[in-house]
Image (cartoon, rainbow, N blue to C red; front, side):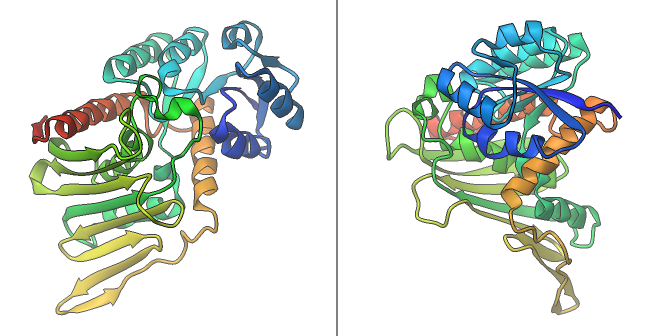
Length: 332
């Protein structure tokens, strides 16, 4: 079988830590080119991975590279332009989250994908954690009854030390854009993508006035179920301390570690499944995500975490910020 040809635009932390190390080990993938504005980074990384086609300007790469698909891992404020250029050049795309600065930009990317008949996927790697996929399966089994509360928390260091990351004009926002969008996306996916009715959120700017470093909120769903979340770069915790607990009428499930309890009569039974205990859930989530994207490029499977879902996520994120800035409940 021919190899899927992939190019990477943006050689920052996520490309160096996960994308390139994983892609170079996949036997059905060939990295055809890389692009980055930083000459030193471009030279060092392309030499490390033996990639001969290197470009300082991604537009030149699109003219000369024969890639089937492109991974976009650049600052958020560049996603819109790069994504549309790639789609118009006939490339499938995987965009690192968040998809864009706002829903209007996301909608334009979606239209370009439809017009060019190309797949556009947005990197929501939490969905692809082995324990999260098992959690989704357990919820879908119906064994735990109707889900009424999904409680989420993510306390972590700031994901990137680069200066653009805390400039709102370039990043789009702070910890809500960095961690919050992933948590909320995962919770909605676990809920069966129930319709959001209203949100109430507060955010805190302790480190600088440009972007928030901490936030807590409530997302209310149709039927009365709720999602609660807490995200912070500031609160003390172990690195990447992610907690997800799902409360159902007949039981409770959580990850980190993956445990489940089901109520039978008046007793609680340990219903925890085996598996889902990968030693490196972070890298495994990206490996699963990249394999899924490659499968979509090959036409083997539909895209999970599509651009249309990302548009909805951006509209919800905008409502979250409106609530945080006005300190009022926002109805959707």
